[in-house]
Image (cartoon, rainbow, N blue to C red):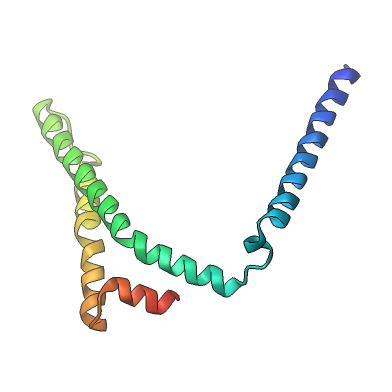
Length: 126
């Protein structure tokens, strides 16, 4: 029984050594991580968010359509089988919020700032 415990301990120690070795090698081999400043990271994160915002809006809108449509189908099937409608209205409402609210907020931000949402994100984040 003690042999199994020692074997597991050796595996954990060797895994820790491997993780430490990988962290040190990444820091030494890649000079960008060794000499990167926080301002560089924040600037790149701002650009990434500005680039991925339209994709995120598309994904959320698609999820809203799928949730709302699935809820409507569930309402129809529940009524057909003489069952009560329980959670389905929440799905319809949540789908509508996902479909309409996110682009609506971005449109309001564009109209208030007078510039495109992508330029507004870039000016705020970096």
